[in-house]
Image (cartoon, rainbow, N blue to C red; front, side, top):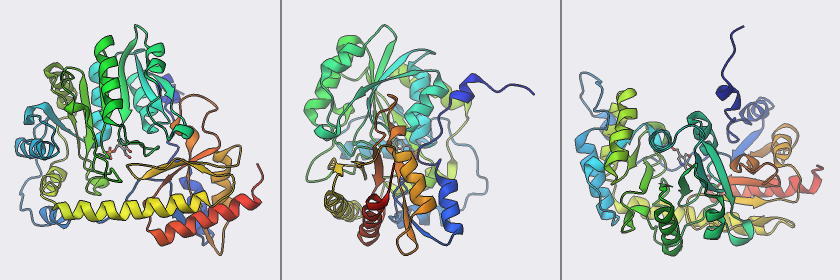
Amino acid sequence: MPQISNKGVSMPESPIRKLVPFAENAYKQGKTVYHLNIGQPDIKTPQIAMDAVRENSLDILAYSRSEGSEVYRQKIAKYYAKNDIHVKHDDIIVTTGGSEALLFAFGSVMDTNDEVIIPEPFYANYNGFSTASGVKVIPVISKIEDNFALPPIEEFEKLITPKTKAILICNPGNPTGYLYSEEEIKKLANIVKKHDLFLIADEVYREFAYDGATHRSILQEEGLEDYAIVIDSVSKRYSMCGARIGCLVSKNKEVITTALKFAQARLSPPTLAQIASEAALDTPQSYFDDVIVEYVKRRNVLIEELNKIEGVQVAKPKGAFYCIAQLPIKDSDAFAKWLLESFDVDGETVMVAPAAGFYSTPGVGLNQIRIAYVLNTEKLIKAVHIIKEALKVYKD
Ligand SMILES: Cc1ncc(COP(=O)(O)O)c(C=O)c1O
């Protein structure tokens, strides 16, 4: 039989999706499963975006320009200006989700065997994108005791080698919920300038900043124009994960010209979804205000309930809609499977994401889970109750 590639063999499984067959078995047994495992918000997509799709009268669903429709990019630039981020439409390439923007960024700035430093735990698919690009992830550990704040900058400095091409951050963080301060962003800006590295910031959760905090984009840093690459997406902002629209933003012309070649190779981002995403940009501020109120309510309930369980440690998120919880267990992978296969409270159980997949250092995060608070507070309370009861009887 012909052999598949070594790269294919090393592609990691998604820690979020790999438990799906176990959840399906749980459904077959008639159980209700509360999904705390995946960042699929239950928030409604803005009506204006749905209407734009329903009401459009296109005769041909044609390709768009590889960099995305110009009108849409002009509107994205205005959206950024409203957020005090000043870019032009030709600093933007529209992509098939933030996922493709990450692939384009990796492809544009890193060669095979180059290294990217990422504070861990990090969004698990960074592992997959790195493997697909032949790039090596060099993790720098951020700790639950520090709420997953930026590790000391000296820790980054120690890891820089001639192969290092970029530092990648996620702000606010998935899975940590940590929101980097302006001071932390400045530290990163200084180190990338000093060592001539790119700073890639995944800012797909920009709107989700809580407790009065404001998000600081790397594109707001003066002097970082040649170094900064932002990854963005409509998926979470407008609860439009299925639209598959994101973008890559950089003021570095060489980055844009290079990323555009990757964009040309895949021809075009989805046309219909660009129409929806363009319309979504007119979403009234009240939509976001309501969404933020809802997520803060959920976060508060979740953290309060988790803190009531003996032996559980949790970092309070300041943004996004995830948190990492440390449990009094040895192996959260086995625990997550067991919850689906062998445990329920009155026919109900939960699906969580084992956190080890969000680390690239082997053996770290084994006793942690990631919880996405994408369910309403009533369901969250039930789900945490199930975890509490489960921990009383679970044996590693
Ligand atoms: C941090 C982060 N970046 C990027 C993505 C990719 O999102 P999409 O490809 O849907 O835009 C996700 C999705 O969950 C994410 O959490």
